[in-house]
Length: 161
Image 1 (spheres, rainbow, N blue to C red):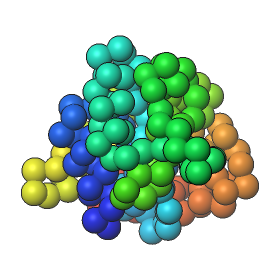
Image 2 (cartoon, rainbow, N blue to C red):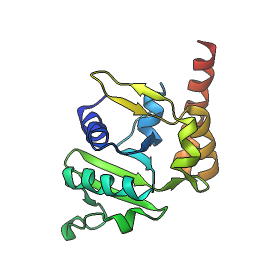
Image 3 (tube, rainbow, N blue to C red):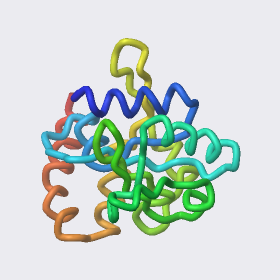
């Protein structure tokens, strides 16, 4: 796993954030041979978690990617909604998502997110392939449709093992 992702995940863990890795990095961690440019997480919107998440994002020097020249940092009020917060950090892009697919939240996804040991004490909850496939089918974007055959094949192979 690239150092930039490890550093982002370690920072989230160091701040005791309740989150789940989804998207391309989640697929890679589940064995899919896909490329990705950012780390996507879904997080708990519980107030205590939001406070910790804001602190972690401050530690990462996170700002919104849309207008980097304005240097807008996310606040708890931004994160309390179920929307997308597309950020850039000192370790690279981080998409902080209140929900994915058809409104699936942290609470909806946590039971489908077994923890993976990435070594050196880094334990990370990662969305399972079945649920990731279902979410990508719900979204149905061109990018999501393109990766679905790879995810389905990876799931088939993992079930055979």
